[in-house]
Amino acid sequence: MAEDNEPAIKITLTAIYDRVVSVEKQVADVATALPSHVSITKEKQEEYDTRLENHGTRLSTLDTRLTILETQQVPRAPWFSVVGGIVSIITGVGSFVALIAVLSQLGTLTQ
Image 1 (cartoon, rainbow, N blue to C red):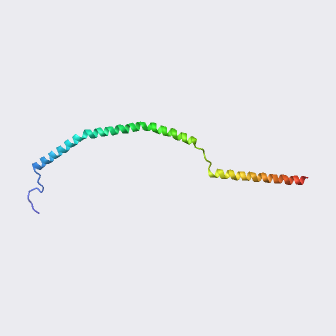
Image 2 (image 1 turned 120 degrees about the vertical axis):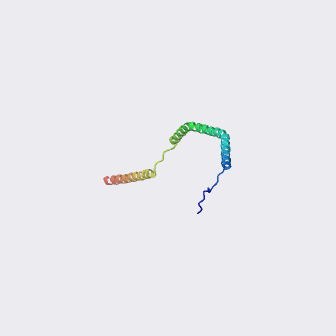
């Protein structure tokens, strides 16, 4: 280990000056490009604002159209209701046939 008072990194005034000039040039470039970026951003923001203003109107229109479509749909019965209806009709017909058979038997017994 050497104990000398020499710095390990030497930064000269010329290097500092060059770095400052470089940073100033970059800042100037950004300042030059900034107005066009700001105007583009404002235009986009205005487009977004317009879309958001119309968004409520579009949603209410869609809601109205959806309500109309829902009222035009024919409601469908669930499958178990249909099966229950068919079973009850068959049971009713069977009961009617059995009633006629019982009445005819009663008629033959009473004669």
